Length: 234
Image 1 (tube, rainbow, N blue to C red):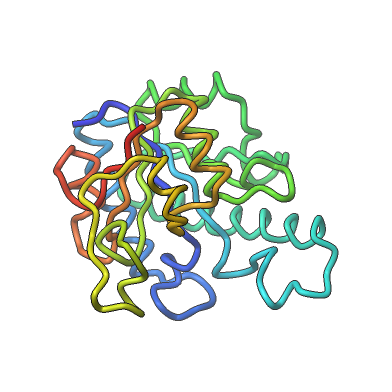
Image 2: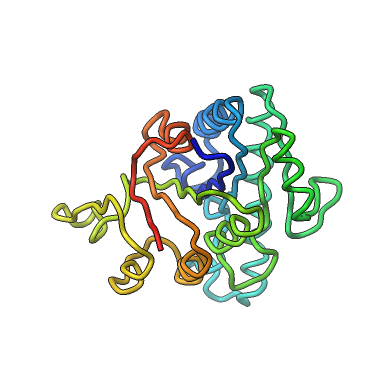
C-alpha cells in the first residue's frame, strides 16, 4: 500500500460519458473509493481536470485568446473540485480544496506546507485551478503537485486499461504495456500525458500508474498497491 498518492481525474471522467456537466453517481462512486483508501491510512491528494465544462485548447475556444481560455479552464476545475469535495465529505471523510487561484470565499489558497499538514491529519486534499498559470495542463499540475508534496506515486485514472501501442478504441490490434519507461513514451510518441508532465515525472523519478477508473473498485485497488493498469518508471 502506498503512503501518499496523487490521483489525477479528468473532467470528462466525472461527466461519465455525458460530455458536459457532472454525473452525480460517478462522483459519489469516486468519493466512496477515495474515502475507503483514506480510512485505511493512505494520504490521498486529487487533481481534477475541467474538460467537462471548458477546455482551453478545445474547438469552443478556437477564436479566444489562449490566456483567457486557459483561465476559464482553470475555473472549471474549481467547479469539479467542489463537487468532489462535497461527495467525499458526505462519506464522513474530511476534505479540503486548495486552489492555485485565490478565492477565499470558496476554498483555501494552495500553500504546500499547509497541504502536507492536511494530508498528515488524514484529510483528503483536492488541488484546484491547475498550476494557476495558462499554457499548463492539469496533467502538468498533477505532476508538479506530486513532486511538491513528495507523493509515492502519481495515479492517472482513464477510460482504458492502461497504456497501449495505439488507441485501443480505434485500433483493436493495439497491445497493452504492463510496464514502460518515460523515455519509451517520448520515443514512441504515446499520448499518455502531455510531454511537459512526462518530462517532469522523468526528471524527478516519479512513478506513474495509468488505470481504468470505469471498473468499480479500481481506484481503491490501485491505491492499495494492486498491480493493475500500466506502470511507468524512469
